[in-house]
Amino acid sequence: QFLTIFCFLRYAVICGANKGIGLESVRQLASNGFIVVLTTRDGKRGLEAVEKLKEFDLSGRVVFHQLDVANPGTVASLADFIKTQFGKLDILVNNAGIFGSIVDVDTFKAAVASGAMERGEVDLSKLVTETYELTEECLQINYYGAKRTAEALIPLLQLTDSPRIVNVSSGLGKLNNIPSDWARGVFSSTLKRSVAVISDFLKILGSPTRLESVSKRR
Image (tube, rainbow, N blue to C red; front, side, top):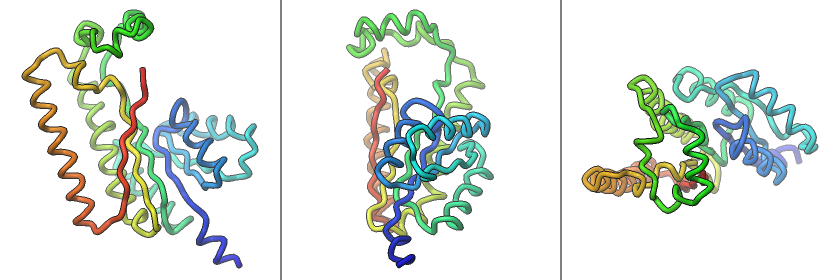
């Protein structure tokens, strides 16, 4: 009977889960019977997030594990933890990310409130200040972080019947927010090729993993 129950348990990992969409994803999955690993870069914030969820009576279905997706060592540690504790993984939600720029917050909020952002009428170059250091950190977390986390956990996802990877993006990444027609064309072609490469990669792995992308509106 124990083995039967164990086989039917489902497990999820949420990256960047101390607030917002990440925290709500943890709550909803745990409420639906998943054992959820809540991960954050900052250990203190992660433990505080777990405390917040106690009011929903999730009966120990949420556990915390520190994860800095930009640090390969912590990614490997998470994979080892899941393998040892659960033996498999059903869902990975890549929600860890940073903006990568210094934002004029007041102007940005006004653009969102007026709907100008959604209509693509805002020149983002006038709202943000970029530095090399912030851009590099953004790439390390938003792209390489999601990539290395998926690569480390795919072997565990392959051990379940219906694995799923969800990549959380942002409406700020829409191509119509890029003012240059030339740059928009380059990114559009790159995006289409990237989707094909990812699909081919999963086929080579022989993985049934379902890959999804969702966007949070801002």
